[in-house]
Amino acid sequence: MRDPLTSDELVTLTDDHSDWLIESNAMTRTFTFEDFSAAMGFVTRVALAAEKIDHHPDIDVRWNKVTLLVTTHSAGSLTELDRNLVDTIDTFDTGSGS
Image 1 (tube, rainbow, N blue to C red):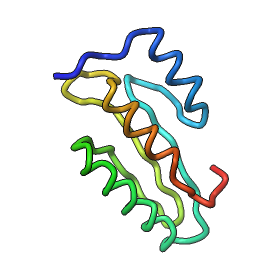
Image 2: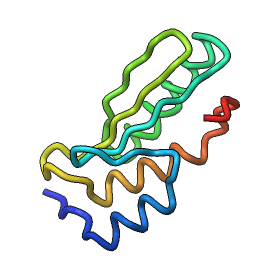
Image 3: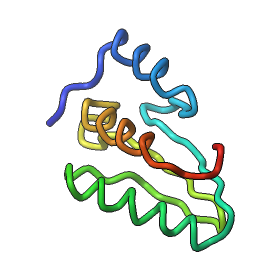
Image 4: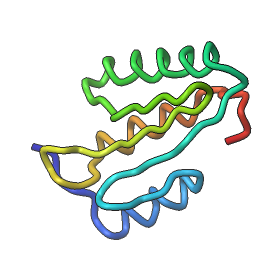
């Protein structure tokens, strides 16, 4: 099991990823795309990144909107795995401005 992030680490995480919300021991963010195809392309990139580190977000797709929820369920909290996944996702060019 992974150790939960400390309070200081959570502050840094929030500062580094201001487009993400932290609520109920999870990080969430909604991305908006031009159309369904672009949204699904993004989902594929997220899926490949998640498989690479064996840590998978909850993904909700609504036509051109993709909402991700990232947490370490086994820890009941955010961990370094979540930070790593969010760091990677934030490098993707979403072309959405959100």
